[in-house]
Length: 219
Ligand SMILES: NC(=O)c1ccc[n+]([C@@H]2O[C@H](COP(=O)([O-])OP(=O)(O)OC[C@H]3O[C@@H](n4cnc5c(N)ncnc54)[C@H](OP(=O)(O)O)[C@@H]3O)[C@@H](O)[C@H]2O)c1
Image 1: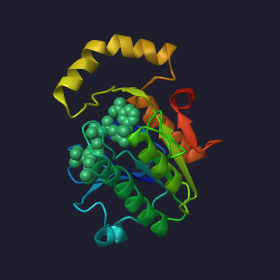
Image 2: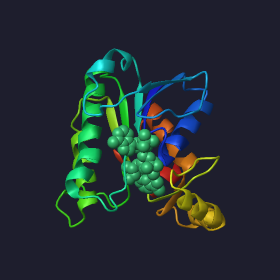
Image 3: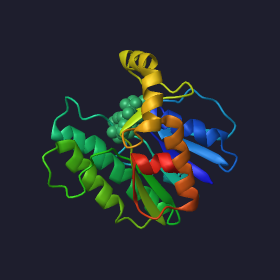
């Protein structure tokens, strides 16, 4: 597979990138981001882009891909609804609409989160906006779209949060998080498991479009 990765510099995206680079079935990875991954690799090329609502200047470089792993996303903590909608819905739909037009045979996988509100009517702002994003992604003319809803994610293999104190917590809590991944798969997965699951689903499909944490861990 030839794959496009958004959000490769983030915690989720770093994990997905690692699994893509070591998977012999993935021939090429194109990371599209506003900052470099800093990970030179023969399979990896990168486009640095600054306007995530308009991809027209780089469209010619976004064709010929089999899958997109969309890991770009932000926490809603401390953010108003308008800003969160812009960073979540507008950016995701802009990229996805462009990719669907250029790659009709593409499988699009989106990292959303546990508790996403498919009704778009609930009380939680972030969950409604993620729900609308999921629902509208499913309407685009991709070969298939899959929505990954992890809960907690334990970073493995050098994957790091961009926030230093968060990394410190992950280090201290590592034994507990490993235990939770085994005994409570509804609530915890690992960066490795999430990356592996996204690759498997893009390659072989899955019986339903929404994958909860326990589905991700069972793959
Ligand atoms: N981390 C978790 O435990 C967890 C659990 C469940 C769900 N999720 C979901 O997974 C997704 C990714 O989370 P994460 O933890 O990987 O976040 P993160 O570490 O903060 O990374 C965010 C990624 O999105 C990019 N990005 C953010 N704002 C951007 C913008 N305006 N324009 C272009 N790129 C932008 C960042 O690029 P820069 O490096 O350039 O800033 C980075 O690559 C989110 O939707 C989150 O809700 C995460």
